[in-house]
Amino acid sequence: MLNALITFTCLETKSTKAEKRILNNSIEEVEALSSIYGDEWCVIDEASRIFCIKISSNLEEPKLTACLQIILPSDYPSAAPPIYQINAAWLRGPERVKLANSLEDIYVEHAGESILYLWVERVREFLVEKSQNEELPPVKHGKPVTDRRSTFQPHLAPVVSPRQVKMVLEKLYTNKKIASATHNIYAYRIYCEDKNSFLQDCEDDGETAAGGRLLHLLQILDVHNVMVVVSRWYGGVLLGPDRFKHINNCARNILVEEGYVGSVVRPSLDPL
Image 1 (cartoon, one colour):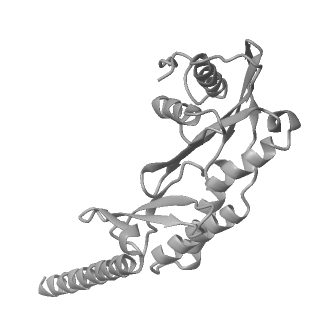
Image 2 (tube, rainbow, N blue to C red):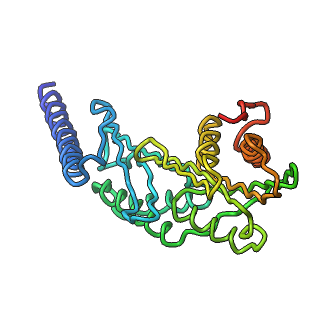
């Protein structure tokens, strides 16, 4: 009986030492990451070992961002991988699967080792690759509206970076009719995961205050990662405040048509 007790005590002691070693390794890894990434590293719940790292492509333009949220199981890294979630509004479908698979490959290749640094840098590499190979977003064109010989037409594109905004504008200006418009007013809103805020801007293109009113519309509709351009061809008759109503109505209509807002949402589109 005594021998059994001694054996059990020894096993328990070994188990406890192993658990402490695992815990110490995890603590050291977390401290190292905090030192490396500074403000980008965020402790969500220390007791539950939940952390978040904000990652960017480190390119001035475009700058893509993502948040990697992780939970460290009690048996990480010896027997279990981190539980993770990637938060990035622009990351969808095949690209998300591709990134997830690459993280899983890293875990398999380094089984039993600390891998958080490798994961963070793999996500960063993915952002850089994505930024350097950004494609022109699809551009949609809405129905034109004519009032007293002035015509207004909206255009819409999904965007996730300032570079894509520039690409969309360049694409639109290859159309001679759009390039000849008296004004091409635009506004965009891009959600930045790392700062939990919006990158947004607008342009009047000579139609004083029209860009700001268009941006305000995007704000009250709370649309994300989209830009709207409204072309106006002046017909020789001054429309007064009605021109702002037409610009915003055109913009709202194409946002509804493309599924950015519900058709039942009807904020006031009268001039502000």
